[in-house]
Image (cartoon, rainbow, N blue to C red):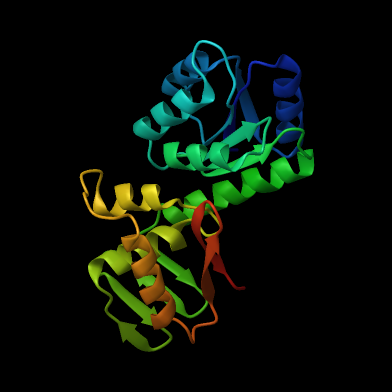
Length: 224
């Protein structure tokens, strides 16, 4: 069964989160601060981390950054007591995959955890399929039904990144860093240009849609 690491300095919150996760069949381990969470992660097999922002010794921002540095593919769900847009943006830029605002509905927590684990399994493959569209990262080919498409490299990488974790919001900064590299000196609006081109190429494709999340970035939604 998947193991979830829950990092929060509030013992009552940890107990509540772990209780609901265990009831859903997950194993849980707990940490009272970011430093303890990082130590547990290095010695325990962890499949996903639920982390609070405001913690002593090492806060959630730093923990998120360190975990993402250690494992680029580890699903991270950030808990925040406030819902300001800047906090969400900062969390995404540091590597969080999703966020939940306190007080939260335990059912929503469970749904988000399951969705992140599902996204991770999709994102860990070299071939992604949704509907009639197949993205093959080994050949950099796109199949749309029986039609084979060849995209410019950056467009393919951008589409593959978004499709690998459907529903996840990526900021422009994240996409620039992960696709163009942290040394890229150009305008981050290049993302908007590439998104526009992808939308135009797949305008008649009903299998997915690239959505703009105002104030945050972009996400790809798959249509079942």
